[in-house]
Each structure stands twice: as structure tokens, then as C-alpha cells.
Amino acid sequence: HAADAHRTDLMTITRYVLNEQTKHPESRGDFTILLSHIVLGCKFVCSAVNKAGLAKLLGLAGDKNVQGEEQKKLDVLSNEVFVKALISSGRTCILVSEEDEEATFVDPALRGKYCVVFDPLDGSSNIDCGVSIGTIFGIYTVKDKNEVTINDVLQPGKNMVAAGYCMYGSSCTLVLSTGSDVNGFTLDPSLGEFILTHPNIKIPRKGKIYSVNEGNAKNWDGPTAKFVEKCKFPEDGSSPKSLRYIGSMVADVHRTLLYGGIFLYPADKKSPNGKLRVLYEVFPMSFLMEQAGGQAFTGKQRALDLVPTEIHQRSPIFLGSYDEVEEIKSLYAAEE
Ligand code: AHM
Ligand code: MG
Image (cartoon, rainbow, N blue to C red; front, side, top):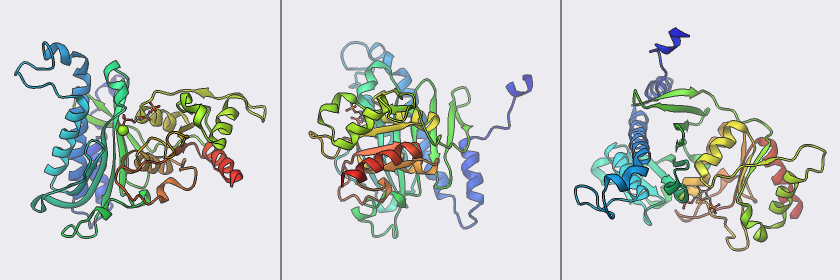
């Protein structure tokens, strides 16, 4: 429709969050400000990722760019971008990043009530070949911003007030939940705005896709091995499932959310806690899955019930369509 091409009544992410804010009359707009800083970080990283293939050319020989500065690796750059964006929002008090060994306690003068846990650029093995990568984040609140301790971020995932990710793929997509539903926004590069393109995402109850690094199969435990075997050789006469595995959690989870199915990063003999990090990988994705009507399970419990004891702790994770996760849960229950 010609009319559609000229639509100016767009639901931008800012408009969406402001709308949400009006539902809470007590709100002072702090979350809206925090989110606008996260969105800015995502736009910055998106633009850096899009230029990454040219970085060597633009930077001329070696690792130096035209100004003679060291060319920063994308993951290091992304971390700096988000740390600065979050601190300058004036709304954060503790930051936990995959890139930093220690948590960052924000200067009291710049403190706000939010704690943000994030992986600034996940899927590092995919950076150099141009495959989708992403940023993952989760947000907690502190009780008292004048008395913050590390325990303020060592909270179960169910205490998060919001979580999301931004995927730098064939388009740049930001998926966000503030605890009532899940919405997807796509960056319109000509406007520089994220536009609501996927309102109220619900994951299909069943799925035809499984997503796992099968190269680790030799070291899997019984229930994981059994589950994957049943994906390939179903015992109930149904068709075998398709395997899709990108090796970028954001991309694999995004597809799972939209098409249904299951994403697994299980424990194995070499990594008894799996690979993925609880605070800024497992929790935000589990939060989104549950909000979209799916489930997330660690092999022992509901993922969001887990209480982390260390900021970079890992956990096995099975997440996706309700029925698929139900099946893996019953395989683990049968083991006990
Ligand atoms: P990274 O933080 O080093 O990028 O690792 C995390 C990534 C996830 O995006 C992905 O799900 C997983 O590692 C893939 O791991 P593997 O290569 O073992 O299959
Ligand atoms: Mg990561």
C-alpha cells in the first residue's frame, strides 16, 4: 500500500516504553532513561559490527587505525560502549559484564537504583566471519542505592525487572520484556529508530527444531543423549526434528523464540556446569522464554529459581517451547 510506505505513526521503542510508564503513575521515568541508554549502546555496537569487515581496510596496515591508535577488538569496544552508556545514564549502581572479571560499583554521585548484568558482544567465535552476534542484558533493582553489595546482583533470575537482547544479524533486532510480555523492535537504519515489528511474541507450544552443539555428544549425560536421540529417531511416529545451530546464543535463542523448538547447552563430562553464564546469558534468555510462554530448565530446576553465588557462574540450560522443555524435564526426573 502506498499509504503504508508513508506511515509516520510508528511505535518506536521510546514511545513504547513511555506508554508503559504511564501505566505506573508512581514511575519517575528512571527505567525509561536507563533503557534509552541501553538502546544507544545497541545502536553504537550495531554500527561498529556493520563496519567490522572493513575495519582492517579503514585501519590500514597492522592493527593501527588512521589516527595511529590501536584497533580495538569489537568485544572490547562493545564493553566500553555499554559501561559508559550505563554509567552515564545516572540510573545504575552495579554493573556485571562478561568482559570484566570484577563487578563495577558506580560512583555514588552517579548512582541510581538499577543493576545491569550484560554480555556486551556474545558469540565471539562468529565475529570474524560475519555471522549474527548479539548483546544480552538483564536488569535488577537494589533495595538501597546507598548500601549496595555484590549480593544485590546475586539474585535469582525471577527477581529481574527486565531482560532483553539485541541481535546484530541481517537486521538489527532488539527483543525486550519488562515482565509482562515480550516485544521485538527492528532498527530502521534510515531513521535510527527501533520500531515495534514483533508485538507480544509467543513461542509456539511445540517445535520442530533442536539446537545444540552435537560435537560434545560423547560427553553428554543420559537424559541429554536420550532427548537428542528422540529428536532424530522419534518413538511416537512423529517426524524427526531439524537441527539448527549457529553457535551464537542470541541468534539460536531468537530463532527458537520465533519458530519454536528447543535450545540446549547441557552439562557434559568436561564441563559439568555447561558453558553459558548464569547472570547475563542463562537468566535473561530464560526470563524472555517464560514471558513468551515457554520454559527454561537447568537439568535440576527452573532456571529462574537458581540463586547464583558467583557473578560469572555457569549453568547447563534447556530452553524453548513448553512441550519440548517438559520432555527434557521428565527425562531428568526419570533419572533420579
Ligand atoms: P562467548 O561468550 O565466548 O561468545 O561464548 C558464548 C557462546 C554462545 O553465544 C553460544 O551459545 C555458545 O557460546 C556456543 O558454544 P560452542 O561453540 O561450545 O557450541
Ligand atoms: Mg558470552
